[in-house]
Image 1 (cartoon, rainbow, N blue to C red):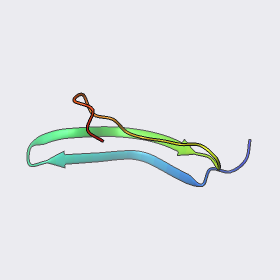
Image 2 (cartoon, rainbow, N blue to C red):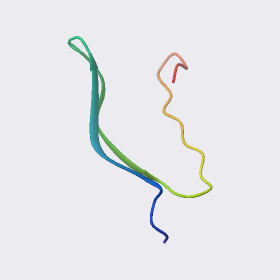
Image 3 (cartoon, rainbow, N blue to C red):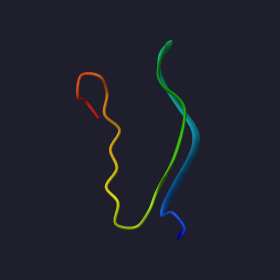
Image 4 (cartoon, rainbow, N blue to C red):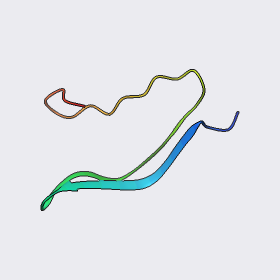
Length: 43
């Protein structure tokens, strides 16, 4: 498989004390469409 154009490893995002994303890892390859959607459809 080709090298990814985006590589993310163990990303974490918090808002104050609220953890929104905890240790998410992913690759995005050329031509792929990627989105991170929250529980209420926000993203």
